[in-house]
Image 1 (cartoon, rainbow, N blue to C red):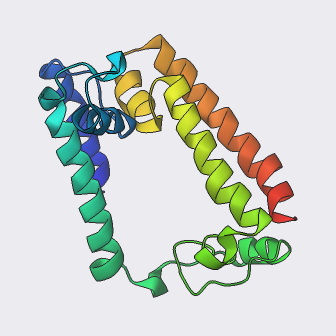
Image 2: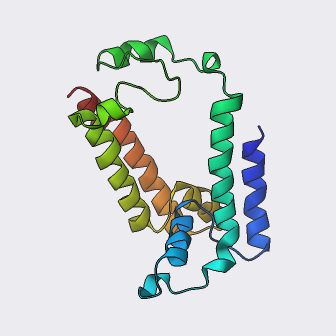
Length: 177
């Protein structure tokens, strides 16, 4: 009830200011343009005009840290019993960290096949898909759809289909390894 309206107000503000690029993945390009020597054409542009995007991402990182360490109450995050039962069938039973399943997302499990597939290979596919689609879910689904962008509609539909396939078909296979 706070973040949603703020994001909703960001869209018309950016459209009024003439900026149609909003999303997290675009900030990675700005960081690379600032840090990598100008030998690569893709990074030859005035990234300083997009510094607001970097400040936005920094705010997300700081806000996430503050929320996780000072505001969050692990007792308020509840995993539904039916989901606990289903996850126990895959060997996910450690709920000591309320935000992520410790049985998969931890340094100890990173070198297991399950952890490697979910963290490393999954991360690669997220990064590849973001670049291939020309933006991330927030860029396409929030800003792109608001700007009535046909490619953003196609990308958002593909994100949704991919999410349903991953959650209902691929994830159970990986978790049963």
